[in-house]
Image 1 (cartoon, one colour):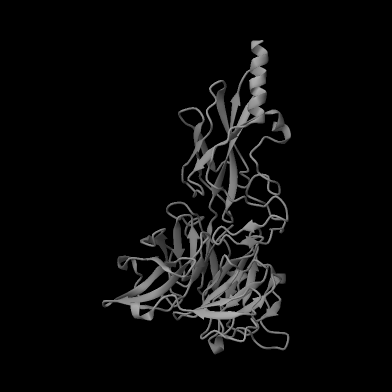
Image 2 (tube, one colour; image 1 turned 60 degrees about the vertical axis):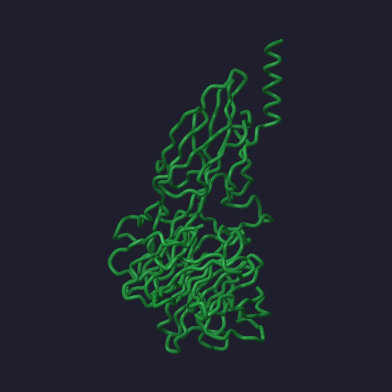
Length: 463
């Protein structure tokens, strides 16, 4: 009778697994093509990756429910574990907490989905039972945002059971070097943002470029868009670097001219690519001229926005908002808003010049709504570059305190890294050897110093 009761209890436990609320985790891949992949910075859907590249995550291409499957299907599902912090950085300890199992022994711990970084992590059991610490210690230079699984396997007379914790990890930063020997440097997202491979190793070497890069972006399949300085009218304004091959994909060079022969970007006319971004409809927008230029993901020229109203200055910063609109800056206080199809355009001025603001450069859309802008401010004899956050209604939220302003520099590019922001130096900076770090409150946290005089320009986080 007692044995029957135990078996009945175990069956009920399997049918009604315990649920523990944990932090939301972005899956590396959606379960199928009908489920959108969300951009972790903007919350907008991206095209589903389909490049055939290796995936740094567990069981990509199917729903990750955490429930045992395949050979583990006979294991009891003991519910979900939590992981904190999530997402985590390289070399940042992640605490795993699983539901207690008083009637079972263990657990034993394991990690799944660690493809490409085998041996580069530590997993240690903690106290009380059911807790552990996971730390990712090394990654390849092309490591993107990833989700791994830490598993706790418990043992009992009625059978073994498993509980799992998805652990979300931040991908590396790639930073363009706009020197006479152009390259892309890889930085890990460890707390100190260590340069991958040391001082002399870059992720992509100078032989892949026609001229110094000015901006970086991502295609939905993880390949990297590189906007180049146009020293010659025939050079492609944008090239594509394969995230796995770390080499230029020549077949995807972007058109330098329209079908009628018009040069799209010409340095002789002071028109260089300024920002590059793929939108949710798959098109790629490039700013820098009087109007953004729109390409297909294959690099073929599609046209320019057809809205009858034109921007009041050369376009600079670029972002897609959560409502689908494309926002552009013009190195003034005005921000232009396009419909995604380019058929409508309006300009807004959310900040007032009388408050000392000028020269909006970068625009970064936030997943929770609103934007972060980089711009210049003059106040009481002091001036410098800073970040300003606006909400979804374009109302002021916060800005960098004066002590954190950068002297006479306005950041052309800003990316989000977990609970921080990282910005590039002024494009015309003498050496440009420093990246700038800001906290969630936009206070300056410090700098990430490069090696030599790399003249850092574009920046992107791999995902």
